Length: 218
Image 1 (tube, rainbow, N blue to C red):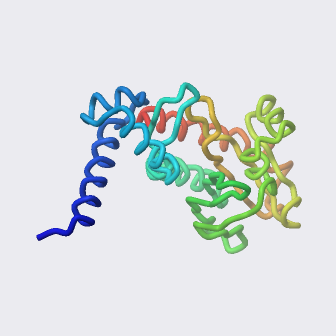
Image 2: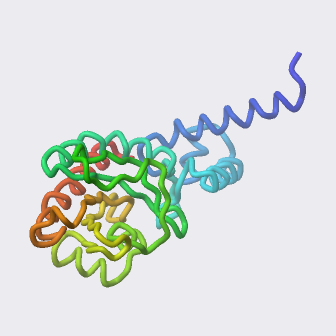
């Protein structure tokens, strides 16, 4: 026989699952959540706000609810992996996907160059904002956003680590920067600059990742 505590936990999980099913891939209001789940509006709204705190949902500017960063991240990695692999093959350099976590950036994907001299940061690495080309973008520095408007990318030449360079471009979802694609390399292999050499390819890869995310409607 289940305890009252166990029954309460199961009921909460059932409600959370129902809300996730109700949200699916489209933004919905609290009243629509209530209609789809059979919960009261107040209960649906309270649970949805709690799910926002844990990253299961996120709120839009209009106050509706969408699937949260936990699900976006999984979809993003799935969408980005083949694109980043093609970029690594085309350039021969290390390719990374970065997302913002408060005042840091986190590497969620890293495909290392196969060359002996290479930039290597393992998946899960954390760096403070706004260091590096991706850090400047994720921090949304006005100067970095201006560079993106002009070129489509932002570069870093030995600023974070002497001897290393990078070029990054934003991944956009619903017109928001949700990640960056970063190509990192030793400056010894750079002909003109990271951006001049590789910026167009990195910007195109970031655009493709964003389009794939949009198709998945996360």
